[in-house]
Amino acid sequence: MSNKPLAPARVASEHTELKARNVSFGWEDTPLHWLPGDPFATHTINVLHLLLPAGERWFVHVFKQVLPHIRDERLRADVIGFIGQEAVHAAAHDDVLPHLRRQGLDPTPYTAQVDWVFERLLSDRTLPPGRARHWWLMERVAMIAAIEHYTAFLGDWILNADELDRRGADPVMLDLLRWHGAEEVEHRSVAFDLFLHVDGGYRRRVRTWATAFASLVWLWQRGVRFFMDNDPELVGAKASLGQFFRAGQQGVLPSTGAMLKSIPTYLSRTYHPSQEGSTAQAAAYLASSPGANGGARP
Ligand SMILES: [Fe+2]
Ligand SMILES: [Fe+2]
Image (cartoon, rainbow, N blue to C red; front, side):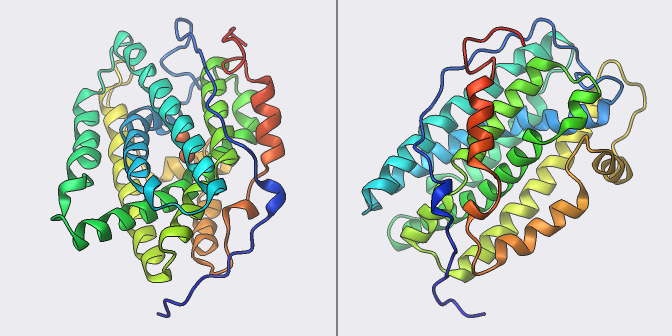
């Protein structure tokens, strides 16, 4: 495999200045199965609340270490904006956990595993100081770029997932997911641009994509099974791949076809995140999001 420089085709008009927004969501009236009658899709999306706080805090921790390596002022401003947004995302998803506990679903056994992945396995000290540790920092930047390909994919999906509205999904949960999804679309190029700036090697891009993708699938299916096994309102319910396919066909989860298509997209040498999703759509949602504009229940 050649490691020659990439030639990403950037769409300049998709760039926007980033800022963290104050948000407020009230969970008192959100039911356990916030997508009525569909605990599987509810819990598949609920895994985000367990993965993202630890994951996004890890993004922030890694990117703060990369700031001294940035030689481009606009990219530095983008990375600082990204760090601010991800810190708020982590806190907002964390706030859902007490609500889940009040409803009889204590996520601690699962979040302890997630914390171990991000705080131990992927920590600064995984490799010894010196060149190996610098290599590890670059590897983690590339991993974050790959993960951000999927957060942008999910952000674009949730902004367009009209079927969730038709099925009466809880408006506060939808607003949390769409505010977060819109900011993921807004900052979708930052981690990739940072990776291009500090390294950009194609072999590293492929390797870290494979690691990130396999890890996300592994953590996600464990999370869905955890929710289905521990949901106090379900007896003997099981998560299955068939349910996932069907939910994708119905439009209440991303479709398997779209997810598979996202793989060659990321691995194309001309790929740039600005080619996918719409900054204008994200901005329009953020301007109208109840949670990002005072916090009233929609
Ligand atoms: Fe985020
Ligand atoms: Fe993000």
